[in-house]
Length: 228
Image (cartoon, one colour):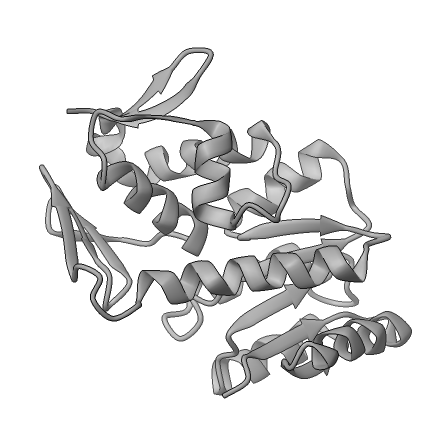
């Protein structure tokens, strides 16, 4: 069954171009020209991934991402920003609101397709048959089937990227992961992400883990590890 991609883009020509390239790769697409329309459709029938413009009429893409993340029906749906706002501060803001990736315009259709495949592959790999159902360490538990994380038996709401990052670190306590290694583990080797992106996701993850934040240690000049 083809993955369903929701495209929220107010410029119709760009929306059609994105849909055309995705359809050629076998994806099922739906294009929405406003944040309100996209949210309503996503809540009614959650897609497998949302491609989201930032500068939309009415609700901004940032607010759309925030609302999708706050609803149980769409909280785990991967969100990828596709926008002309390419300053570092914009990228950091988008990731902090829960986006899983960030592509700047003008974009290469090949890069777009690679990133969509990488995000969806991450999601599929986490739920593949034969994988362990629960990964637990100290007061943190990751339920792979339910795609849920609990800390001190309280549910922690994570983005899909934060979930994969935590899982990578928890599976190898004490191992030091470079930023490049983490990028390859959570996004796929065919996608370029800079070190700053990893740092933003780690900061967001630590904040959400609260009292357990110190389990994620920074190894200066190298990367991160989960405390043994």
